[in-house]
Length: 323
Ligand code: BDP
Image 1: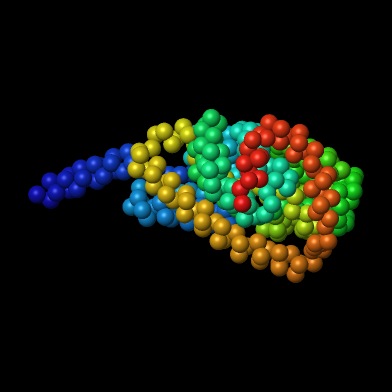
Image 2 (image 1 turned 135 degrees about the vertical axis):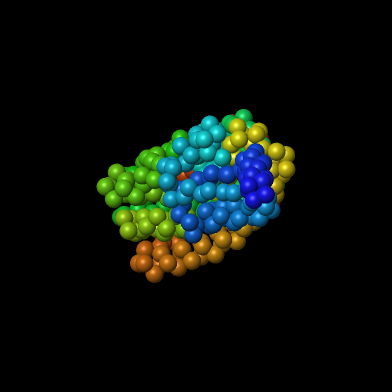
């Protein structure tokens, strides 16, 4: 009697295990930022939400803090299906789906609200769908504010101040061209190699939003921050198409639903963090310069918008028309 019961329990356990393994989905995802950053915390929220709604069938494992290297490598892993998901800057997506480069042009967005209206609307949806050709399922966008220059030597007020400076840019030819037009020297380096590059003098500076500049402690090496706000590059989180195709329609739908909430969540977290980072930077003695001749930067970068923009003239016209 006891034995029979035991084997019955064992049989039930085996059945459960098999059922679980058929449906269980572990979403391994990556981010260059540490936990506590708006993007990583938004992903954590996504994982918890999915876990709850799927009754534990879907879980998420976050490889944060560049544990898996830079963003280019992460995207490759996702394309191969070795990683289910990743969150990257749109800056590195241009080389995969060309149209994304329209978002990577300097001063293409008039404001954060303008960028949000574009990515939340038809254009954003079209671009997410276009990722399919690159082996990716575009789940959604996240905010990353505006990027400004920081360097070891001086405040940047006008393009001429960049002359002779080696400035790290994200790995995309468009940013190297942008730097040349501004009169500086753009050096593409992966984010995970930037602190050392600043420390060893491979570059004199870089450009980023306040939360990245602050959390990466780049101010320790380059303490002059000038609010040029030359790029408003959104972030994106993408799923592996290879893995996506193995999911059930229910799982896909749940992930899509989670993605919408995740974008919203990240925006809330972003706004709070951006303000906090700026205050912290000032407290740490960073020389923040807001006396910037933006009109001069906009003018200096017109050739980049013309040269690269020619291929997406139609798209750029539509972006401009968005309120
Ligand atoms: C940060 C983005 C991150 C990029 C990084 C960079 O959040 O995705 O990798 O900039 O400059 O703002 O590479």
